[in-house]
Length: 264
Length: 245
Image (spheres, rainbow over the protein chains, first blue to last red):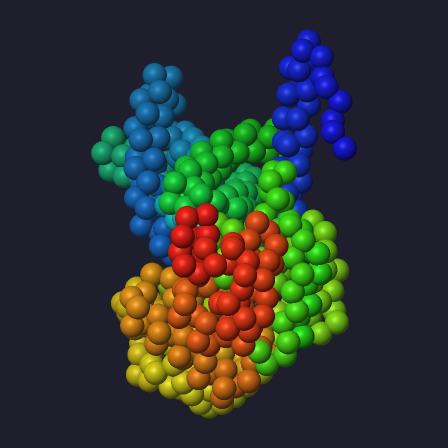
């Protein structure tokens, strides 16, 4: 059956409608992909080795970059906040200012962005190459679900490792701030850590925790989806990797704002 | 027994499979020939359940593949072995681990039993002792053999070969063909081979089907297909334009 001709004046609306339909369709596929990945995690047989492999791949191999960026982020915060607070004679609040900035905001966000750049891009590229070299098809025709072996373990590894890497980022960052504030600029150690204990409470820690858990799911979801649906060879892999990193980074910042408004 | 009836598939309105009818008898080697880009691999992907037809039926022992989803489809696939055009070996695993993988993941076998069956599969394809090398460290011919060993280690009833000799020199092409024939005689599986290695592939075939413009235009024993009066078949066999491989 042929489609009825569309009047020229209505063609922009036809294009808009087609775009909207495709957008909703792609959102549906994106959501369905997550549902299948999560379903593979909660239905037997459970696969431990792929999970441990992904934890090593996403978490352990990101430790150095997390520690490094955490340290310098804390040092920059220590320096800038000290200079600002000293104008008001409030240097004593350097510890809590650095800790709250890191624990509530910068730790989860920057750790997630760094892991996206290091592990997320590699995850997309790896799955993309597996797709174009028919390795994912090979798993499928062996009656072994790629969701169970590739996607589910990546999602769970993200949820497990992101909070741990955020914690590392926070701790190293706080000691970075200590290095600058106490060792270089002369604030007393007791003031730095004492005021921190007074101002930082469990709600702040939990805010950072929930952010990092959701970023872990978000990044691995986007990166596995993009890798899983690669086409058109090497160019397709490059394109998917770029899209995965850009989309993950944007979503981290948007989701961070949203969580910032709803979490205490 | 695989029975394909009026199988149709189009991409973006462009028909690729245009009403394929084909029977694959149990225990036979059926070769599908046809020009590159003519839909042979698409057809094979339908047979192994990686693509769904727009219309038509694919029956495997009386079960319509198009009606199956999830675990029901996996039950059929457990009886399959597939050798992909690229080999599709897992590049993060050694050659031996590639062969071990389907056995370890699909069956509850003892470690000793797995080792025995993997050794036997590697021996059957002439690769005893290759085990610890990664796919990127071995030649193209060896990768094909590892892929064949991986497909056969689970002792499947039906084995699909998607252009198993692409990219190999003529000596290796004949070696792989003889290997397929030899394994078929020993293991008695049903084989469907997609190939455009003319005329070498005729030596191992029980039946040859020519796919042209989305249809099987000729089907029969190799000698009958080679003697076919169909000009499309003759042009393809002789490698002439419009019927080229």
